[in-house]
Length: 115
Image 1 (spheres, helix red, strand yellow):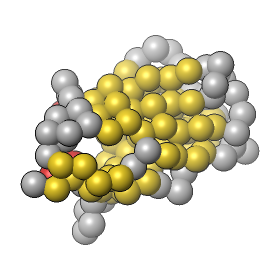
Image 2: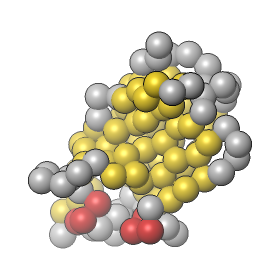
Image 3: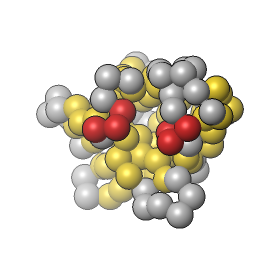
Image 4: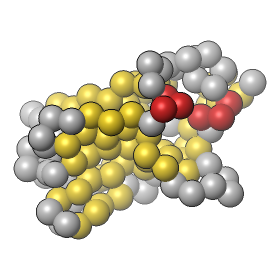
């Protein structure tokens, strides 16, 4: 079992930046994958960015070149640096971790981008 706690959301103007952080309650070194998803009102939850223990990193097409995912194994954190934010990036952002076959979610953090 693991607890994931997100932080760093908020309100920002279009073109601005935000950094989200996800802190895990245990070592992330053995996790199969970790990443960020988002869910906008009336839409399905979708992948934003994630990396696997095998070293692969995936970004959703709409965020490529603007968002960067990173991890710190010593701190058990996964961060999402978001730049050049757009109103369509407005959503609740969720931290995700897969341990074995079990999927874990954080509580979510709201990101609102004003035009």
